[in-house]
Length: 104
Image 1 (cartoon, helix red, strand yellow):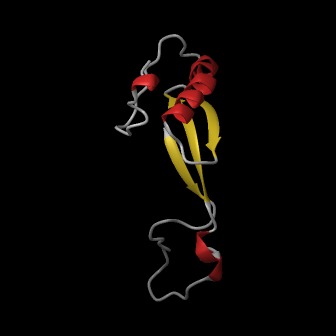
Image 2 (cartoon, rainbow, N blue to C red):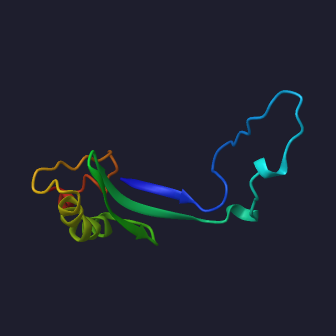
């Protein structure tokens, strides 16, 4: 699983719930940062029994980097969650996930 974490705000629309005819309260507003504030790409694993390792990705990921992430984290995460050796890795259709060198 890949996740993109936004440090400040959201990359989508934000909503504030308030009572009709009430004044907008400053505590309900989030501060903003010019030019987005940045983000961080993260690889992680989850199961019904818990979560595995997180791996922070600092550059553009290709199939070789993805394979290294799997080698460093997948087996260790499965053992940490207590599901090793009986687990399945589910992926989306990203080409680097389906690359021949990444097939288990």
